[in-house]
Image (cartoon, rainbow, N blue to C red; front, side):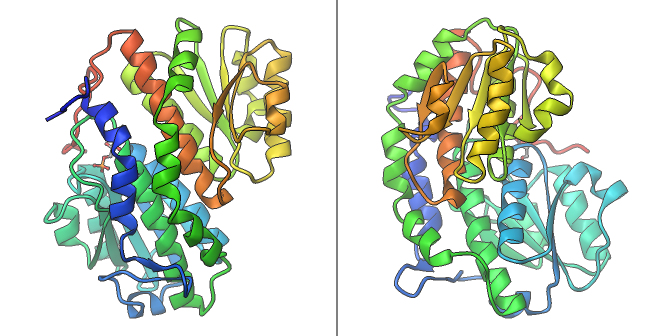
Length: 360
Ligand code: F6R
């Protein structure tokens, strides 16, 4: 049950220190700085020269996150919407690994992509939360995110666990397929270990609640980020729109000036996510919005330069840039939750949506 919580969503956001700890348990060795999974032997990836991640919704945002980390690790990787896979998949052959990222393991679009990938001769891997799910049964290999059951329709704790598994997987694939990984996995893993306690620090939620209160009733809400901050911006906007029913959109920070800036006014708060890579550019992009009168909500560590133009601050701990997006996501989950709560929305069962989408 929900226990002391009014909603499953808040319970599941709050569970993240534990779900993350379960996700990483036994999967990396901080002393040797190496990753291992009980499934997915390194040989699985030895002949892989390209990775395609297919997913929908929040899982697609985790897949985008994973693709960026894979590319930083030196692996040719792309994320594609599973529902676009049939019409626009990149070339796939027996040296391609297709990763289906799906919390439920039952999303019809994602299963469709998985089956098409198998037919094309790819090695397939399911990254899922549900043991025995269709995706887990049908894929050649499985990696379980071990986040525990998620009841709220809005995916929360499973996003962080997916992103972490994909980060660890990136190092594994790079090492197995190219012999080296350009990822500083030792540094990353040292901080992965701190994630549960860092997330715990964010859960007080009072800053998120006051942001939700302060901007209640505005015309639209935009989220911008760069690099790993981009999937985080997309996810921040998806969560916000699906449970508040307010207009929210995520953009790559650098894209703002290529069109979306026309929407920016004093009535459109811009949530700017700073993940520690090229932050000065993202700050310039946020400044362009601030010049048009938009209030800027900066998601960044304390003492960050962005605070000079920020109307409000959602603090995230200083952590390896490969992981700070995860912490930013927790803050954005809390903002969406509180905004929806203030509007009295049906948070755990938003209108028109289902937890598991079994039609194409
Ligand atoms: C958003 C959400 C959906 C799912 C999507 C994929 O909060 O929950 O966007 O992420 O329907 O579901 P899975 O991961 O089960 O394939």
